[in-house]
Length: 359
Image (tube, rainbow, N blue to C red):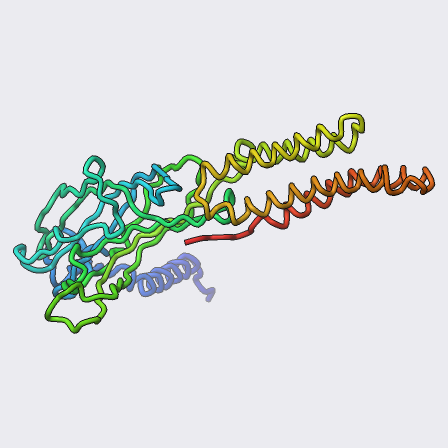
């Protein structure tokens, strides 16, 4: 009797489909489970603020500690003679204690110069946020900076704004730096200068006197904390070379002409001396005295030595070597000009400081 095969292939395909569906269900089981709701974002223990996530600003503050931050918005009024500059910034504090003990209003910029028409240390806002008191101030004033100009016009400086308690003998509450939010406005522009890196740090200041406090030992130093914001600025030397050093450039050009034009050599050399001396006097009028002992003083010496080289070479070849063959004298005369330019340019290049940052 023949076997019946009708329907068997379909049954096999159905059985295979059931096996595949079962395997897929087993593999997909973990991914099809219900996803639990995300846990609530924890808040700082000292600042329970419903509905707001914890941020760096809400990081725990130590008791009796004042957090200080600064944001520089304006910089101008660079004064080299009076060792100062103008700045405007926002300053804020976070205080975790009672409002009556908040020391924020006792802060001041320690390196400021008092000027009733310019100084402003004004509180803009004060709010309690959770268990903290946030205060915001605007500060505008003139500040001290000791410029070191020995490498002018290739000088760089670190500008400092030191914020601390007005009373230098006050040591508490302790200060803390808000590094996460402090900085410099990206729109800040200072003509003639290139802005570099900025930072903020906590340091300690010391006075070599107890300021007459009878509670302190005579001669004992006083120490205080200060939050210091720093900004590196570098002078754009290319903007100052032509207008401030035009006399030196003219002196070099006159020496070149003196070696080319023999008939008026004495007049050209005299004009080169006057041009170099006049440039030095001009720079002495716009810069402090200590700047003249650096790059400018050395440059003046190079220019004057170059002038003496031109005078000496002319005198020796034209008068002291009259008995020499004419071919030799012509060869020496043709070598004076390139040697003068090579020596002068090499000396000036060697004087240019590289990577100099003065504090």
